[in-house]
Length: 391
Length: 162
Image: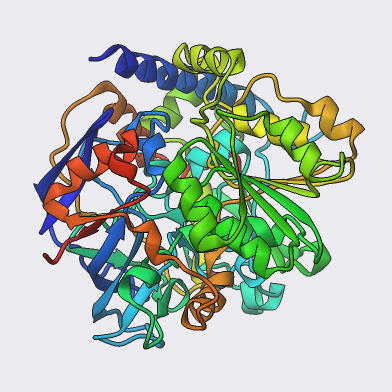
């Protein structure tokens, strides 16, 4: 079959690879209908997460049609149209039974890597390096889905393929942040990053009862999407002071909840950005926490910060004094999508959540390398490049 | 190799050195007190009752396959977290340079214990051991980082902090 592979730093290619096969009884094989780039792919693409091998098939956000089922699969049959959670979780361990699916004990066949790096291994993830299991990704004609009864969700009639695509990762990641950050009705929420995940976090915050939601970015086309499709306020950090503006909009308090949906390759204005770039390029820190620092500084006393953007290792100049003295609550997580995807699909079906607008550039899989270039460079207003392996 | 590629390789290589040193330190320690020369208990927490983990005191298959290499026990985990399935080598663990060499070569008995514990947990909780290979992939160009990642993943089921 055809697949889009990682060849090296900032290099992808479409190659012919073996078809996936059922390896465990709980697997299904999916014919991929749509698969999309994600901002977290850029960390892999750029070599910031070094556990990649040349030839790895990319892609972790996808939907498609079941074409083969393992003999222990009970919920799905050939022909089902499903969206699949990007995280691979068994559904049976203590973490899964407590709905902390991305922390699954059994979903990562290479546990030593993250156990050594972070102290504990988390679950597996499609195409997110060999540190998260080495699973082949979805930028291919077919993909193997382990633990399919838990990780694949039937798409309701009336929900389009494109809308369902983002229920795989962007929307449940946003939901994870908004829900676990502890938003309560009436809260003011600030979201750093107006990409797919940031937009979905903002919409989730609104549906969870936030009274005021502000999304911060520098790209005008993304901020326009926030205003038009999400219904949140926007703030362009290149033309205004984020801290001063948030103070002004919140009566001098600062946001109750701050959600960082940027991650390890944050952009910013000012000297802190240059400092972080230099240290990252010299490998003196693995991640650039520029937006994270600002979110901590902006948050009100006693407020809550949720780190939703992907961080891989260590950061420098982390303002722990602000966290301690302001009495903040800090949390973070990869997505517990199994917990949120059913309600997200229902919100889409009910017209309460819009996701299709994220698919700004739809193209055949053969154009995948071009799609990643456009996505990385934000060319032509690209929010997400979406690939159609079947076309 | 590009400058960034070289940087990544150095970073990963540096990480490997740190890992080996840490493993040597871990290996040098024992699980006992008072200088007793024995191996450390290694454990997984299984989301099942002790009776389900070891019915009639039967040792789970992957650990039973280790025979006289290990002793095995199960006990309740606190906070309704299931059971702690524990195993330890009956002989002292390798230490120092011998420990690092055994780990890198894949002949360290602790790797077999960790793998068996993890497999037993999966079999009890899920009913199968999750596989990833063979997985579809494109051309594997030979690179230093690729070689390091390949070596690390070969040992990944038997290494870590257990």
